[in-house]
Amino acid sequence: MKLSTALLATAAALFTVVGGANAAVIDLNFEGINATYPSTNYAEILNFYNGGTSNQGTSGTNYGISFPSNALAICLNTPGNACSNTSRGGLGDPNSQKGALFFLSGATTFLDDPAGFTKGFSFNYVAINEGGSVNVYSGPDGTGTLLATLDLPTTPSGCSDIYSAAFCPFVAAGVSFAGTAQSIGFSGVANQIVFDDVTFGSATPGVPEPTTLAILGAGLVGLGVARRKFR
Image (cartoon, rainbow, N blue to C red; front, side, top):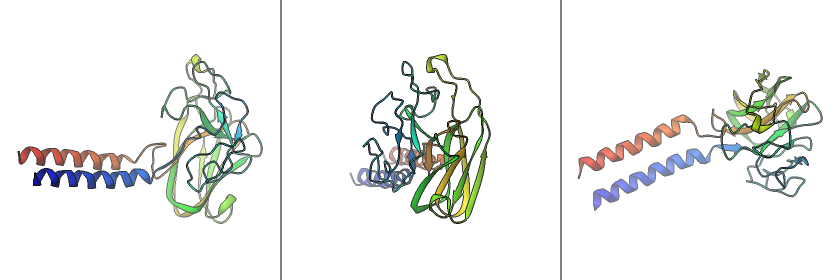
């Protein structure tokens, strides 16, 4: 009984550590921002991720992250639902297929995180006609020091006809930097670039770091060996 109790305690501690690492991963998948799906009435994201609401009254997890009024949640096509010329094509996270970030006015929209974030972030994007860029700043709304710039080339267009979208599939990208950032500028030609799964704490959009999964796997193997040894 004592050994079993010790093993269970070790397992619990392991899952706590891994769970804490996973909890640190923030994934903005832009789902549920539009009040209805499918819809061409694209929502202004505003304070959806900041304890408030979008301009359509929807609200999500409070990450302390806000967007200006030109940051919109575009409706993504799924089989049988056509609401834009953009789709994930059934690829990637199955829970991130209906919404994404884009803008219809200006050349840049911003993500503001007053608490600040470090090291880097990752995301998915699609831009079949005109490329874009991502810029990271030390202050809000693109102010302060420019910490990093990532140029984004055009992406291929080639999803199944069932998705009725030319802007498909999305491509993964990421950028690292030194210092603490408070804002990200997503830039490009209006209505020509779309972003999704903006992920802090992981080099892969929408998922934990591979090292986190490796720690979990190694721990479970170790527990299995110990259990067999002391049977």
